[in-house]
Image (cartoon, rainbow, N blue to C red; front, side, top):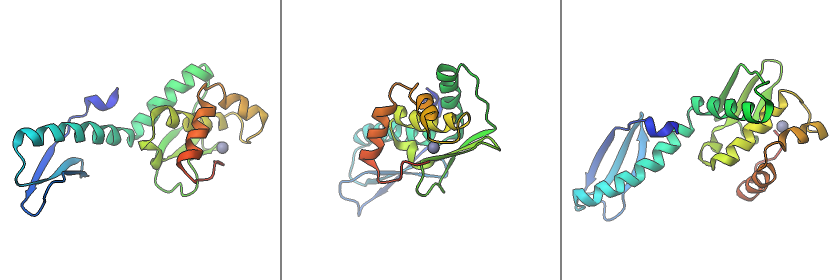
Length: 169
Ligand SMILES: [Zn+2]
């Protein structure tokens, strides 16, 4: 797993005004932890470890190298490594779509909103866009390609349940 290799710098900011809650956010690649002044170092460390593993996953999942790795894996497993693309990247401009594939330039964009979903769901979306490299339309042939991924139906259900975003991408 890629994200385990990423070391993360932590910056703790204690505040007397803060009562109980501990918050963490990413600021320029560093994890900034906002904590109450009264909390003990030991207790804080436990919280930081938990928050870190959560944020680390997110940081890594938002990484284009991660997408490239997943696409490469799916290509090998379900397309015998036959697919080729120029780039696959996260995009924050995929308003109503989860992903898009430009078959001419062979570039794939994946909505960065998906970075926080379970890997098997994100994999489905990548599968969908990879299948467009072979078949631009959403017809029978396309569906057969996408359903090589055994969790396709479940992922579609998951996405419908968690979002109101249009399925057509
Ligand atoms: Zn599509």
